[in-house]
Image (tube, rainbow, N blue to C red; front, side, top):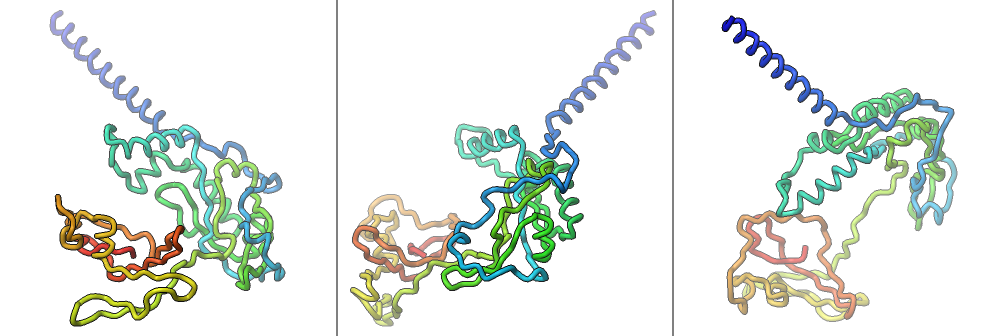
Amino acid sequence: MIRNALYRKLWIGAVLVVNLFSLSSLHGQQVNRVARLVTTAVNNGDRVALSGSIRKSVKQATDLGPAHTSLMAKHVIIVLARSADRQAALDQYLSDVQNTQSSQYHQWLSPAEYGARFGASPDDVQTLAAWLQSEGLTIEKTSAAANMISFSGTVGQIQTAFSTTIHSISVNGEKHLANITEPQLPRALAPAVKGMLGLDNFRPHTNVQQGPTAKLNPSTHRIEPDLTGYANGAYYLYVVPADVATMYDTPNTALNKAYKGTNYDGTGVTVGVVGDSNVMIDPVTNYRFAFLGETSRGRGRNVSGS
């Protein structure tokens, strides 16, 4: 009897453990399940426009007529939408990752981790990709972050797929291709799409203005401008890293001789350069500050404005 009772207790315990694991697994599946935004069958005859997909400069452009349908359009991007709960989770994460009091502080994610937590539904991504391919378009890439699909095709294929019109236009004397009507999507797919990029060939361009030249004085080992004062409709004030350090009281004794205190020379610091302009214009005096010298990466021994 004792032996049978012991077996019964062990059996009941084992069953409880199995059930607990099953419930835990089911709970995890419910938590990780991504809500679909495409919930009805795709009907190409029932469409809605993606508003905001026409570049503003197109309205002031000179229309040069329809673009040739055989031209190739590459790297056209569909920006994917995320469900409301995933957007709320992303907003919370972005707040936490910058909050020093949060356990998520600086807990950065890989693209795949980001996609798993905040990206679009894999089913929605697959449905959109399948529809693009059915229209004769080629999928270039589906992002690991599950926030975009890049594809390519001819102008003719894109016009047909998105019920839009692409023309050749002239803006400020430059020729471009651009859609002059809003692209359209099947109504069933629209909730999963936030917008589109790349239906035109406008590209970012630099705003750098090259200043007058300068040269290194071999005797003083300082950079001296070939031109100083007023030129080309603006005042130029030439400064070297040490000048900037003194002007802004940089805590670096090698450059700012007047500084007294803890010395910071940039050791162990990585600087990400996000622009390429080396000219700063003072909005009050209209002086242009041209920073001469190289920006140091890593050790940061020079201070410059590149």
